[in-house]
Image (cartoon, rainbow, N blue to C red):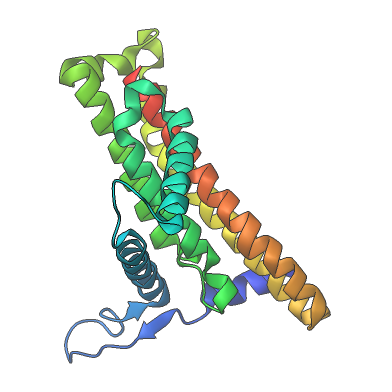
Length: 232
């Protein structure tokens, strides 16, 4: 099976998780896709994990569990904060939340689920929300007047390019994340066809674990850089 055929098969596959027919409206309009179910599953899992891991926290005589959690949070904040810089440090929690959501979403393949980021709607929504945050950060820092004046910097002649960049950045974030996850899935499907037993399991560890986490980090790192540029 060629790569193009695998891509077509994946893109054209029925992505419906829950079929809903209310008796009105276009057929399939109210259906709930797999990506929505996986996204909500990841969010519920993270919320429950947070409640469980933070239960019984103390200021003094902390437990080993609390020590591990606090160390992990500090390391994660440091990782994200390096990209944002001091002037944009207030957006650290947002980037950390997106990083955790993307990371666990991309790991869904390890338990036999289709990653939510395999749906272009999911990556587009994440990219658009990130770029909207970038614009909000810029307006809060520079004011409305300074924000609009920044489109004519360093010289007025590049105004059209700066405006065009508003659409290019989210498109780049969206397609980079979607394309990498799709490519990893295509490779895994082709490996299953050629060597159906041992080799796919080995590569699954790489593509679902390492590459999935890497793509989540790249998405958040680029968003951090855009925010940092916006507030400078």
